[in-house]
Image: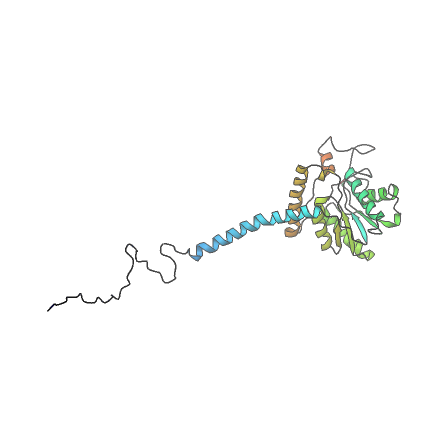
Length: 270
């Protein structure tokens, strides 16, 4: 008789059978892999806030600069109540080249039927005999042949905001509501915002000649300046007084044009 000997059946242990070499990784009850712990909230929240502030501080000026650049390339000519010429330096009643370029562009818009009237804007510096608005109005009537009844002078304002506050009141008095702004390209975005805030439905048709569009370096400087000016107005409600030919004259810049009858005078451009 042959006796067969067999091994007893082995019952599996209650413990898990794991491959050799695999460590027993426990959990902390939150399902997170071993060795990787979540940062506490007192660390995560401040870091997120700081990252958000940095992103806003960087992206906001870049976004505004892009808007300044984009607006500068628009030529908006909707049918409006009036064309608004923002002031620039004048020399003893004679518009500076910058102001003449603006006046000529406004004259072209007027002749094209964009608006039936032109508004010239701008005050004067201490010691001046003429305002920017008066100088511009005289040029449009004498050189441009525009009827005097179609040119309204608003001789107020040493900066853009001050000018538009006065223009807004004049529009209200004349029951006008819309205007096309003539200024330098990079000034369009800020000017439109200020005009809108003073009750004027505004568009912008910038000049394409002048110192602000001569070189890429100059254009970059104007974009940076107008970005700061726009943010200053939106955040603080202040208007930035920008450099002009007048400031160059005060500092003895020989490149600034002289007035026809003596020492040059003028007021800052908006």
